[in-house]
Image 1 (cartoon, helix red, strand yellow):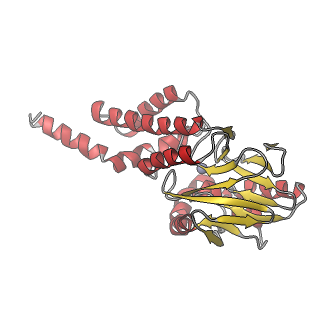
Image 2: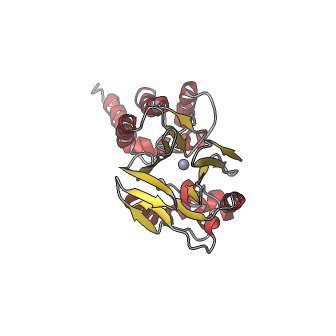
Length: 296
Ligand SMILES: [Zn+2]
């Protein structure tokens, strides 16, 4: 799937993977193409490469917004043997390299050969506030640190029209979200920071779903995170649920907030890790023990 988002000096094309809905973006400048994120799998990475080739401009660079494998896994198939720089903030580069072996253990059984045998990592690291010139485009970098993933960043392109901001997974475009990395508090702070810093007319290009203009989506994402925390605490602490009944109850409640199934599995994968992160099971077990001993 390839759609033009803007017909000015730079044109941003959205490429949605077929394995599951995750985006890569092709930023077409007057001289070249810059790809922002590269999806997860080998097939999608190759298809992304063929989309780049149809633009008949050289691929100048790849940017990786954050540390999750559904955004960097496809870089290897996109680039093949080509010597093309891969940019990320230093923290994103560090986390990708640190966690890649663990991701291999998780993703190989899930995706088989679609998860590339060898992954390609960032080759050029940049810092917060840096202006990165790639061919004739200049990206302003914001290093967010932990948010949705252990390390996130924003890449902003100012051209003739509204600013274009590649937000990675800081915001999902009205899809269920992955919260399993547990940095929900930093994520909420970074959503507030981004609301202050990003112009009201900015076009936000998300890792999942359709790009959206304006700041309302940032508030929506914060509401989604807060609702998830409330729902999870209630289901464990008040209702005493765990295991599959807990996952089912949380899913039912979150689908009242967002009545669709898009990426529901990512939210469901987050239930157990977030119980651990919030210490919910221990608390509900000690509460049960206390009430059993008549201490309540
Ligand atoms: Zn993602």
